[in-house]
Length: 328
Image: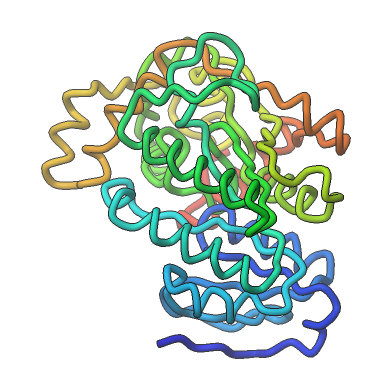
């Protein structure tokens, strides 16, 4: 069963459909509303209070019929739907296939948010043409899904763009290995921040709203961007420790960084299934991890938000979202 509400009469003039209401989907909707674009947002569960200018629909996107219905009339759709780590194999393939088939039936350009897992262990800066070499179960799943997207586009069945970015931070970003719920809750409670892997290695971090902006830019670009992978420029290229230090200082928190060992994450996985899925991804913090995004800079002139601006916006959001002010 699905529901739709608050139909926008402007839908015939270039509807944008955001699939997902999580970390990047929320930023996409905010950016589209700020631009005055007609927006439909889709998720499996129910929505809260209605938002002006946004039509909502709830239902199962693994059903191609439902996907085609919510994508009907859309100029561009943005696939930001994800699943809990421990349910990727069970849920993601069917979700993607339903969405791709729905986009094919509706004739809608589909901008897909992917990640860097298919590349495996980095041997230098990751580029769009870096060959797939997954070294984790989740990387293997993502590599297979990316191949299915490429086949769907190459066959002419769907028009697809793939977007990849390094680890996120920013407003609404709460489910990440470093800058997520646990980070803000601990820092604003006066506790040490935590990190996995080696915090003194260079590691890129992408600003969440930049990921949304890049998806919008590619969604509005010409057909020459289709059938390709595009990387999002990172706001931060430096060590994790340095970025944590800046974020903690902006939050008025306690200096210090604790390193979470893999054995502890394995132990937590007995009680929290998603935590138990993290250790196989620690390789990303055991070598320099950087992303080459020169391609989108050259094609669209796209640049990342300056880090100081990104930190100000992120920490202002965090103080409100986590229910208290830092003692700044």
